[in-house]
Image (tube, helix red, strand yellow):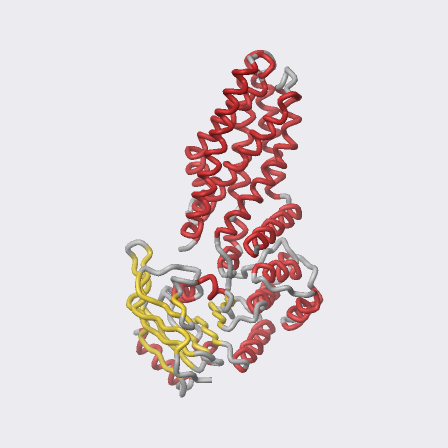
Length: 231
Length: 238
């Protein structure tokens, strides 16, 4: 019970601090929107656009996530607050979970703002009947991105080139989630053109892949975080 | 005040960062109610030693037993008894003073009413800035708030890592008064500093660390400042 209270207090603190400065959210939203505008001009509309739209969406989300993840432990580290948290009489994995939850919330918020813009620019066929699948894809992908990103952000914060280190560590590890997210989003966006049975079979495979990677990444983060942050 | 059973038993402590040995075969006993000041030049290993004692860093080999508890076995329980005042503030600059203290109170599982937080802030003369964000405070004010944060859960053991660094005269006086009060109340205080004069003011026990080893330690009947200066330079070799 205390464990959950610690996590909630940490998440609340992160959200209050972020809403006060909006440092992370502003840069993430601006980056995603700019990327979509640039892609829209680069690819125009038509079948070429339809084929690559889900990839573009996840490239934009992934790099926006990196922008946010780079900032996760900066305040904690620069002001010595990570020491303050590590001195608290609690299981240190609570810090990991709280940071992962905060990242999840911020990333989901950015996606909620960016997705309507994406549909205006890139989506030509209605996918409303499959909207629930899209919501599940976004949520499962965000869990994986936040879980692995938070852990690697903690690793990179102790290195000299911390801003550079996170993408180098993060991108290779996140490939399975990125592939599953792109493929499943593509299924949703092209659902009206494919057979229902094939849609369901393929969708289950990708959602299962996302779920399995989420479980693995969350477990790895939970088990290793204390060793990562302790000198 | 001077117990015979040590609160801290540190035996053959070693700490390395890669190939670099920072602490080497370090042995020390610290007694309950002591005010121990650890002196040493820059890079001697003072801060690393304090970080290990306060459970912030691990160590390579040796053993540390605090109040009968092996630090490696149950550091979470131990942390309830520990407070740290450091030149690092451990405060969130985007939150106000009240929010910072309330947040840390939650982390220590203590329910602090607003009056109690105000009382703590009064103790460090910051009550009038309670709802101002910490980022707008001067360095001295931030350090005073950091002291309030460290004392929030009334810790038995207080670590002080160069606590006077960056403090103005007023903030130093407040910290001096607080340290004297804590000492009278029987808290165990362990301070690191390279400032001999400042370090001897409250101490009833001293140690000199150099090259990762304790090269001198004395408890009770401490020499005066000039006498200690001679001892210090003899052991530091300057």
